[in-house]
Image 1 (tube, helix red, strand yellow):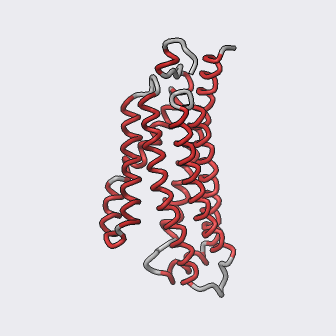
Image 2: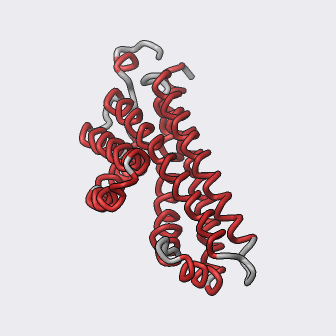
Image 3: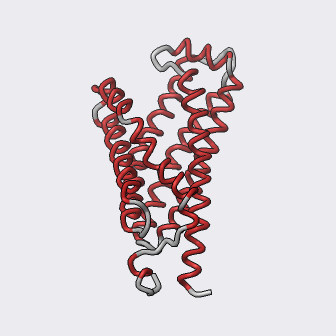
Length: 239
């Protein structure tokens, strides 16, 4: 088996793994944040938040488990993307993987704060203590999403350089990365306009979601069957 054939096999395997990891991550993100976190947590009302967590502790536990799955899938995607793109541009592939792993570390520390809430969730816990952990989770996740945005931008550059990936998917990934980076950078550097930033985030929710998800679906449906050749490989040279 020559180097070109091995590269193609590795790319197809990486495409399948990345696709399934992205889809699993999307499902669990909808569960963790969309269905549980956003309903249990009311940042403007600590007392109500504590009451929700006390009365629905099993749901909160499910949320934490879902976040753990998400973090694991993020790591899997980082590694799979590296193997998928490494013959396109090894340096950018390493940077893309490193950025996603760094984002995963931020998210993991944030999950630690949620675990601390679950461990100490009893009738003696103070709502102020709960809110400290919740704010820490929000801040860590948001800072991490700045890095995640950079990861998507770098990944979009790799996609533009990879033969047979539709340019529209590359553009959607770039737009998603710019949206993540801009929105969460605003949360960090301009906290005084948080309400405005939230409105911007709501407007950009669709492009932020569709960028990576559309690529994941394409990898699952078409990606594992296509010969992924960069410009060098197309002319018969080893990458």
